Image 1 (cartoon, rainbow, N blue to C red):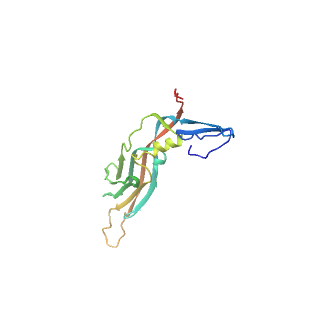
Image 2 (cartoon, one colour):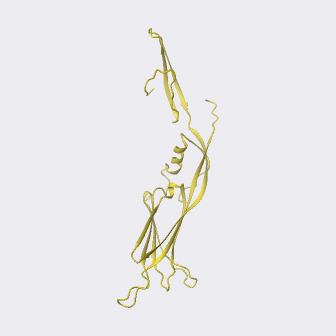
Amino acid sequence: RNDVDAAEEKIMVPTTTSGVLMGSVSVSDGQGASSQATFEITIQPRMYEVVWIYETIEYSWQDYLDQGESWESNITPSDEGRVMEIHAILELNQDVAPPYDNFTLVLRIPDDGMRVSEQTANGNYTNQESAKAEIEILDLNVQPENALYSADSEEQLLDQLLSGNTTLLGLGEWIWIVSADQSDPDSFIPGVPDPDPGNDWELIVQVLIGRPSLTEVAVNDSSM
């Protein structure tokens, strides 16, 4: 029903989508006598055992910025799995002499409306510690449980687990921004260039993701 009628000896019914198919079979002898029978076909969804495997993905960048300049780069960790934690450290090369330079590290996730920023904090100059800025976000998403799931296909279930859930955070593009706010010391002699106009820096971002491993399992349905 709800499909084109057919009169072949064999009809192939698609069963790629779960649900109930309703139909009827009509037989006629061509002399006015006929009979009809209706039927239902129940298509059960496939069952998958899902085990979550965790992995840390690392991104790193190095560059140099003069005072007033900014650097930007984009990543999309959610393409690899469900994002669980974010750890980022921006470290400046140690200045020849104090005071330290002031840089800002920004993370923007437009799909979430998220914006997190941290300014570099001075390290211990005696211990040769560089200025650093750190962004750490734990438990960004609820840790999923290993369980059985039903779906029409592996692709459908992966989409549901990784991007189809509207409560998930960290989806889409991430924008990392490094800004050189202040590079000290400025020149004390008028007309002499600043001896330290900028700084080298390194940004390391570690993202903990969960990847679902799917194994299709047989379902013993006594009603079938």
